[in-house]
Amino acid sequence: MFGFKGKYGLSFSWKRLLGISGFRSSVAHKTGVPTTKGGVERKIGRSIVRMLFKNW
Image (cartoon, rainbow, N blue to C red; front, side, top):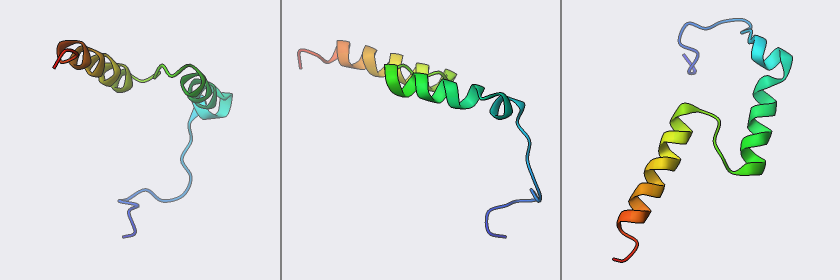
């Protein structure tokens, strides 16, 4: 119900505790380079498509 799907209470992330998540997010935002695997793949794929269809 309400999108929780069996997750109740608190969740814990040691990366968030140490500030790693926020640091990666701020670096990605400032540089424009994604820090996740999916983000990097999307960025590379977009660049390849733009190169292929640049002259069209």
